[in-house]
Structure formats: C-alpha cells, structure tokens
Picture (cartoon, one colour):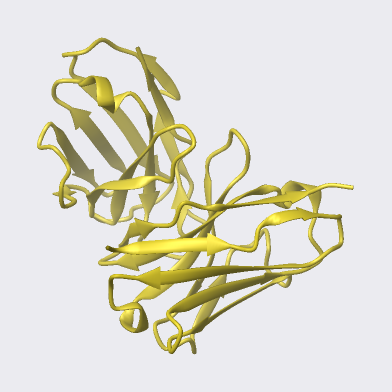
Length: 106
Length: 117
C-alpha cells in the first residue's frame, strides 16, 4: 500500500497569511494526488485534483504543485472560511489512501 | 441538484450486520464509479470499497475485506454496502462518494455506524 504522510499535522495562522501544507508519498505516484478540505461535522470537499487542477468553484487562492513523491497545497492569503482540516489522497493505485490530515487553526 | 444521500446507519452489536444505502440524484449515476469512504471519530479518512459503473467490478480495502459487499442498482440510482461481523473499530461515519477523473468529486453527508455492546 502507498503511505501518504502530511506535514505539519496542525498549524496556527492568521487571516492573510500564506500557508503551505506538504504531502509525501511512500513511492512515486506521478501526478495522481488530490486535496480535500473538511470542516467540523461536514463531509470533505474536493479542492484540487491531479496535483494542480482547481475543482469547480474553488477560489484561486488555493493552488497545488509537485510530482512523484512530494506535493504541496498552498493557500496564498488565508481567509476566515479556510480554517479547516486538509487531506491529501493518492489515486495512483488501490487501495486508495489518504494522508493523516492537517488542521489549520487560528 | 447534485446529491448523494446515505441512510441505514445506526447502533449495532459487535458481530452484527448492517446494510448502508446511498441514493444519487442530479448526475449520471449509471456511468459513475462509486465508492465508500469512512472516518472514525476524530480520525482521518479511509477508503473502504468501490464498484464500477456497471456493477461488475468491485474492490475492497484490507481492513474490511471479507466482511463487505458493495453493490449498486442503476435502475434506482442507488449504491449499497452490506457489512457483517462488525467490530468496535468499524465505528465511523460512512460516506458515499463518486469518483470522477481520478478524484472524489461528490460526497454524501455521511451516515454514522456505531458498533457497541
């Protein structure tokens, strides 16, 4: 199975900050890396597909980059509604696996 | 409106069985790859099972393999997950999810399964 490791597991930031979250795969997954946002008590929502494709309706302050084993999610200017937990997920091979999550707190 | 609505969760004793259902609307269900993903309380996300658009291809995660059957009824836009020999650590919110272009783009609101004596 491909292990996905996110860092940090949590971070504190302020509105307007630039935030970067890292996801590392245990083996190369090409560009098959997705990012999700989850707020408390809600289902996850797709933010970015295949490393850098912004999902419909997602603000342009979110961006993704990387390839192979190392990937990043960047929020260019953190907004109040962005405080949430973020998960990466590989879609390269079964079983599909997720990172442990990064909680972005005020 | 694009929607997935799960049902069937609840309290079940260890060793018991449960069937979850998911009703889809607002998109082409019959041509969609469908999955179940679960999340234990306070924990991360775990992929559980998938079924191809036709229903003929199924795959299962290791933690529940042998205790699950995923199926679908395209005439009713419905997805199912039959779970047996449930354990306390199967306690989780179970999400019905559509996979499109290698990502999970539509999620249901989830249904809670509690396994406890």
